[in-house]
Image (tube, rainbow, N blue to C red; front, side, top):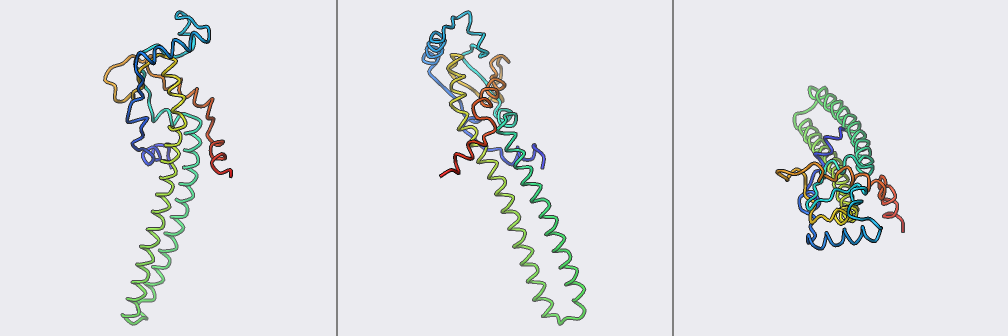
Length: 211
């Protein structure tokens, strides 16, 4: 399955993409300045840390997830799960078609009531099989949604640190901003920092499963 398909499947109303990260502007500026001073960074040197000095920052949530090592791993896993399910669907479909053909061939030699009973049973089998396969697809979809939610929860402290470093009072969803400077978009910076901290997220999976 394509990454685009899973982006549609996993898309949901997440707090980080639908809302705003906000600090009191004065508090944010003070925290950012204090942090810089503690590192021996003067106002003239603040641009060297790679964080735009702006009261408002923007981010692209979909890109943040899909281009991160974490998101790329999840997309690979979802594609693999989807490929397995697609192959299974084709096999099941072929089996049902063969069973339907066999039932059709037997019809001339069967009593109408007997045939009707077999046909009804076959129809019920088809419906149950369809429900089962749909549930498997829904499970894969849920895996993507859960992973996306966990990614943004784990990324939140990193985004908050970027906000403090820049002295910004908010991080907005880039798509909801009518007009802003491209310098205020911190998506690339956030991906770099998140990758450095979270990696592809496989360690988080192990921590979750460890007793």
